[in-house]
Image (cartoon, rainbow, N blue to C red):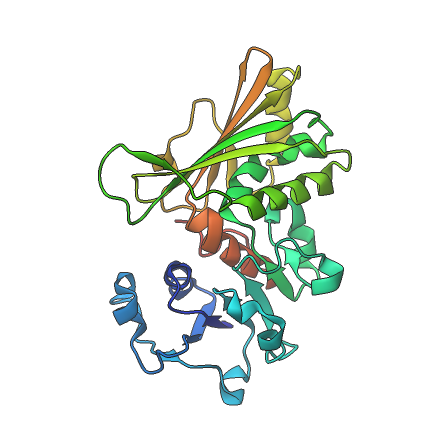
Length: 310
């Protein structure tokens, strides 16, 4: 069993992560840190976990709690600061769900970028620290990686992302996300694409919106391209053939097709001189905690789908 701990336990991300870990057949979730909540029931703070666990929060892991631990998940940015990381024993692997190390250089930080679709081998072999991608960067990257890998991104990209809001009221209103909220993830996307296609330097124009549905993310990106659509489909099918959660579909995907799963569905179409790619994910799962659990599976030599057949 993989002996596991979580830091930042009051975050919503931690609740979704705990739901996956508590039902993972190879995980023993030992403790959850939440400063100021010591002794309080995890299920009381996160009612979605009622009946799933009797764990209570602790203020910080003691030397005794660290003994025998295999991996710790960091669910808030404060826990990912270097001063806190120094407390983690060198034998314990770290999976960071905060944005702290997404844009960092691996040689400087020691964190491998945790997108299995491009870094699976890095996580399988002697990897100790993983930084999970942002949800917007994930949805858009998956729609563009096969093209970047084949040096086919040679014009500016126009992207629109519609993100569900768990606190949204009913209705049809769609609101623009706060200006600049996803700037770092645009940089993250640039980093991913240029790591695959060194010549890529085109601008990425992103419009992000929050919508009145509880969960899910729909991302559409289009750009000028004369590439034959059938050729693009073949490239995508070849690239994702041995990946377990990303699939090409023949019709425009719906959010309901991926809700509560670790899947990404991608649709390819042409509109005049533009190639249009649409991807849908569940931003709480494939966009966040599912990716973290996927990374853990790779770090410990498990099959990628273990605990993620949702």
